[in-house]
Length: 208
Image (tube, rainbow, N blue to C red; front, side, top):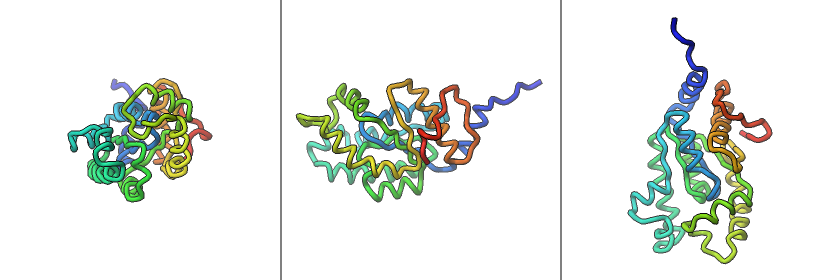
């Protein structure tokens, strides 16, 4: 007798079907965990993973800090927009974007047309703890990086809040946060919640 199908696999298949050709697009500030959580969600759903910053570096053969330094932020944002628009043609996939990408109105429109956007919302202390470990953040080359982050949060959080989904992130295992993202996606796409073995996000935590 055949063993019953794994309900998790069934749920994942239903989620992929509901997604169609769209991408799952992570947005949020530097340090929110877009790449780490994005990779985990891609693994769970057996989807390709792309990181727009890595793609920009591959295309330009320069690092993001080098691009900022040589060409300035406006030119970098123009390149970022072109790269993301091209990547969005290749769904379904999981796509992690740079912290400033979602601030571009045309990029937001493209993401809305070709994807489901997920804002990983982090508090200031968590972001500071994470970004202080890395020296490759062009916008934080400042004597007071905490003040810069606070300013970026004030500017960007109202725009990030227009994403399809908001999932709070915190200092917890990647598997837990990824499970909450998958549960939020299921709710947004009208798919029965997937039992991932991770705690599901509560209604209060996930806003569609």
